[in-house]
Length: 387
Image (cartoon, rainbow, N blue to C red; front, top):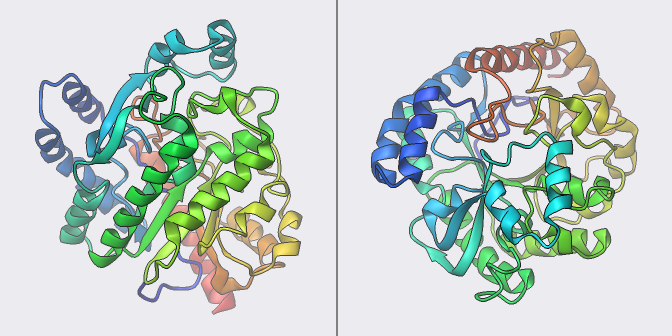
C-alpha cells in the first residue's frame, strides 16, 4: 500500500443509494434488466460517491457499495449456487417462526426489505466478487482504494440455512471450505489488480458476544443453531486466518460493529470490545476497524492490554445521526486511544457505512459528505500536533 498521511481518513464502505438506483436494483432482481445493464446505470452513482469522498478529503475511498443490495447479499450476483431471499421468506423455514418474528420486531428489522444470500447448491464463481468495482474505481480516481468484502465467517453463517442449504453442504463448516477458497482467490486478484486495502466485514461477531438474549439475528441464518459463543469466535479466527494465509502486499482489516440497520440506537447491541479482543488480535490481519463513536461501544481502556498489536480503524462519527460531530470531539476521542496506540497505528473512519442496506439508508448523501469532512478536519488538527 502506498504511503498514507498520519491519521489516514477512510470509510467503512457503504454510501447512501438514490431512489433511482434502488429502483434499478429492484428491476435487476426481478430479471427485467441484466447485472451488466444495472451496473452501467450505477456508474454515475459511483462517480458521485467517489467525488464526494475526494472533496471531503478522504484518503482511502470506496465505491460506496453502490452496485450492491447490501454488504453481503451481492454475492448472489457473483456466485453460483445462491439464491437471494427476503428475511420474510426465511420465516417459512424457521424452526421457531413466532420467536423469529418477535426478534425482528424488537430489532426494528423490515423483514420484507432486507435480503440474505442463501446457499441452495454447491457454490462457485461466476466472476470476481468485486473486481469490476475495483476496475471502475481505478479508472476514475487516483486515491487509495478500499474494497469491502463479507468476511468468511459472515458469508458462511449468513448463507447456510437448515432445510435449504444442507442438501449441498451438510453443515456450515462444510460450506466454509469453499467460502475460504473463493475469498482467498478474490483477495489475491484484488491485490494484483491494484487494490490497496481489503476490509473483511464480520459484524455478526458482536451478536455472538453481546446477543445471547436474542440468539437469532436476521443477518446470520444459522445462528439459531449456533454453538457456544467461544466456539463461534474460534471458528471466525480460524476461517479468517485460513483465508489470509500467506497473502502479502495488500493491507487487510476486519470490521466489527453493533448493527447498522436502524437509527434507533436502543435496538442495537451494547458492550465494550473486551470479550472480543483476545480473538480479534489472533487474526492475521493488519487493522481492526471498530465502532467507537457511540457510548454503546464502551470505554477505550479495554485496549490497554493490546497496545500497538494491530492498527485501529477508529470509528469517530455515528453514521446514523443527523448531528455533525465537532472536530474537537473527534480529536479528544483519538487522544484517548493515543494512550495505547502510536499515532501511525490509528486510522479514522465512521462507525459503519452510511447505507448498509439499500432500502434502509441510515443517512443522506449530503450528511455523509459533511461527516467525512469533519473527520478530515480533525485529522488535520491531529497531524499538525503529532507529525
